[in-house]
Image 1 (spheres, rainbow, N blue to C red):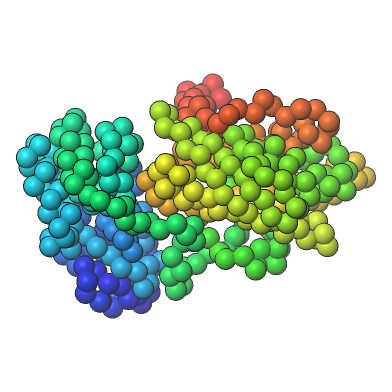
Image 2 (image 1 turned 135 degrees about the vertical axis):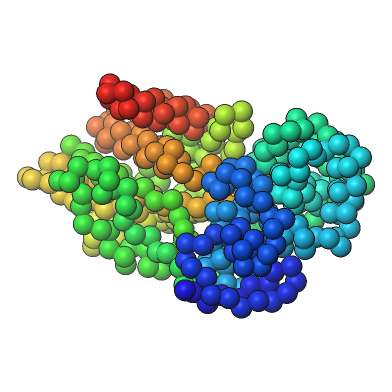
Length: 391
């Protein structure tokens, strides 16, 4: 059990929680705040949305053990909030609810839209509500209610802020970058290399509960040649589908953009990062953060690599570890087995492009965006093929 201190609906509480208990269960079972509803429990439907330090978050994929010191607000805590009150009236006037199961999470998200995007038009509201599902209304009344309340607002309120740094909770579960379990499950036994030294990323702030992917692959080139490629941000970023530098790099910092297509939605994550090579260990890290301006979804990611010489030195084994965390409306895209397989496929594409580049060949055609939907479909087809014995 882990001791935590939280502020829940304005009341400071002390509790001891299991590391695996998610916030929705804690609120419902320990605090008896049952207006927070549980639907998919995968962070997709949005029924469990609450406010964490003022920003909407899925409570079914958030763990109290990582939120020591945080401020939690459920829909009960918005009883006297004037914006929430206006939204409740508007939802009733516009018939924006039927069974009511999605309504608590919908109201929490609607309040955030009204505060952050006053004067939002219908398309903007629908985009913002993409992570909140309703099986009854068809969304017309919901969108109309939000638009009516938003139209009465003046200046925008920054509910998420502009700082890309995640809240600095004093969490005992803060995780440093470590070799991902995926390597042991997916890579052949002979290809699993020793962990990348912790010193390579010791100075960087650890990611909390990241999605982690490890890929191990061999490149038919001397280690020194491959090392030189990794010291060129332009060439490395050029091997990543959907990514590009937005400004020249000085070799220590970089500014980049990655455009990701998620079905009908497209997110452009722009941000900055640092490069930390470790020549003594033939390893290094690339650590960055970015934000999608349209959805305000934030991403933090880290790529750690190590180069090991093989045989007579004519080939190199590359170990690449990728860890990332999404926060915001698109965060549901980062959870689950399909998301992990998509990330693994992306890393495989990076490996193939890297091998082509070192051979002097052009990488596979770089799309204007990374089509995560197409990658996910390829994952599903692979699963089906294995299921029916054709993989």
